[in-house]
Length: 372
Ligand code: PLP
Image (tube, rainbow, N blue to C red; front, side, top):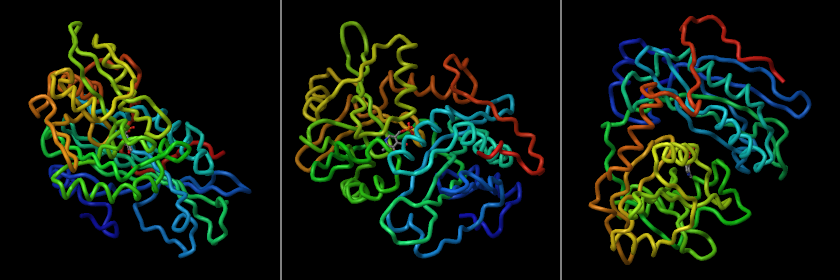
């Protein structure tokens, strides 16, 4: 744990932390902040030391849940450069979340400039190991003081960073818990937005998953409790074996699941690698039958935090089944390696997903672009 009162950390301490497996437990030395008010719009953009935020107890975000966030990564490349993965796509999703929660949008170039500013000043925190990265957490909260039940008229946007250091390059297959008594999102709700309430409301099922020796929940649709939507913090892909070779399918974007940037990347990458891909609904029963009769050879979860992770088992109160032989299948491993190659600049960036950030690491004030 780093104490931000003690930031910045010495290079030796930082290197020690970067070598220890973990996620979301230590933070870089700086943060970006920006404020918005109804009269002025966005203002006061700055990069400063990581510091506590002082909030009045009636700050509206604490009461009515106007909080949204993104999760994305910066990667180190063997030539010493750092690069962000699809930052403009994260900006667009952030703004979709903002509109759903009646919050101000942030111009795409401002969002990307804020990320670049943090990676530039804290470039030393981008781990230099394949599969490791600097996870960036842009977020926005309603900052107005008051208890009136309406959208706030003041907001704070901030970006913080935490190095993601997986324990091993090859992730352990996940066990997923199917809990039909809880739902994550319903039609017309906020399931497609990345807002805090979606996660707070999911912890009860996540606790059940952990109590049943599982890693994550697999969420079913709210209406029929039959269709697989996504897993906690990840989208899902099913690899069918057909006489024409593997075919990948993933649940369609119904409005109740998050449009994962990794999901979209896999749809495009898999097609480029010669796999057939489809966005099609699948029920829990079809998934079980497919695994039992061998039509579904692999399932994997994908998201920024975990990248691509095989699903080894599915468990519910009345049944459980293995997926394939419970280990990573060849399609999962191939896609994972291909994504890592793109992230770390070891394959050509044919989709234009990587945005290079120059890290000259000087301490001069960082400009993050004109304020709107
Ligand atoms: N689904 C949920 C609920 C998530 O929180 C995430 C993570 O952001 C994902 C899916 C995967 O999205 P992405 O690939 O953009 O990280």
